[in-house]
Length: 599
Image 1 (cartoon, one colour):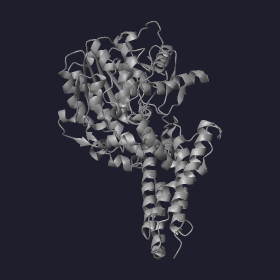
Image 2 (spheres, rainbow, N blue to C red):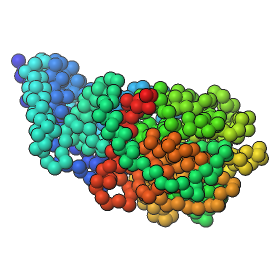
Image 3 (cartoon, rainbow, N blue to C red):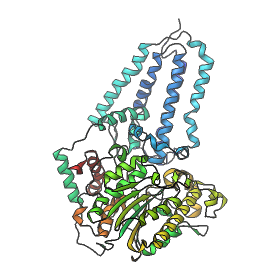
């Protein structure tokens, strides 16, 4: 009888080698910010190759629980499943700088209409993750007769599973507990940079560890008295109770209209390509606007919904998963709608998509909006991309706002400029060169120009209805667009048009007819929107300063932003100050998980 063990299984040995090579390729790809090449790599520490071997051994050990041709077939299936996970993680990393997680099972409804956006994350190098499957199929076809008498081998299974498990326990104790690994090395610890954890554990280990954290996070989180005191001390220390300045109450009593624009990056503001303005209407607004030109997105796993959370609560989104899905019923006593409500404002939110998308409807009601209108309220007369077109939505939104008692606070988002930036030919307004027109950059510019035109029509309609004189129009981007999804593809062509790296910047424009235009270059982010607008509208400082993670950009001595990846962008070089600011990510996470403001 033919031996049925590790040495006799040709397909197992090939499979092991292929998965190891794919793992190394995957780690190399995610070690760059773009996740598309193995150049410009950044390693947080020495890659633990023995850990990689251990996880692969454990994963493939199950193939020895199958006999006859089911043994080689199980190797092929295991490889295929793992390839799907590798590609899924890679595509999600390219678009969100994080990886697939178990919390995403709660948001599968968001996949509707996102097929094109998901496929847009494909790169030719991804083919390397599936080629080996065909090779394994060929090996199986040529050697299938050798497995007729192959029997499952418990000894091989135990050898491949138990010894690597013991090694992982030893490595965890040495590296994580005793701290005797290489500099900055960690295994079973969460890192602010998720690609560091992934590079330490491989996707196999990462998702095992993520399941453990998912189970742990699913339990109610109760902040201890000590944690609450530490949090309060941090908020008090970061507060800036400066004397009132010229901006305090400058726009008091006016309607507040917030518009979160899909994928609106800052580099397009004032940009001309081939002699044409990309955002002529937004540019015109600047004459009567306070424009922050050094303002950054801070969204995370919840992408667009995170932008809504940041603007309306001045809290960072959760470190793992979507805040709106994990904690849709939290209390935010000093949210922007609640602050405005206490000032006598009617509050409403309107979306051109379903209320279930990112679970925004339930969450915005919880945040404090009195009324929420999803796409079912509007006439769906024109659909582009993800849903109701910006033209149709903004036209109907202006009509809705004219019916509101004043003063009111309205919050809305747009959709049409979402990746993959498809605008019908008859709606394109820019006359771009053929090379640029066919590029992702060109498609993005066309989509932004379309949305800019619809914002212009929106403003005209508000003016005709007499609302513009008595309103503040605030416009900001939810997150990067072409740089977020296709930075690798635009890096070469952008040089021909003097387009620099966007560096997570989105515009933050506060418009009112009676404002004198000014550009402020204070570094800030979306978490600063609430305190900044509260100051302008005349809210008392105590009503937001000690419940906000962000700061008032119109009355601050600080110039910095903390990105969703825990990176500091700012003027300070003092490590203690930087570390203090970064702690806000952790404290905000605890505030949300512990529903801190419910008390």
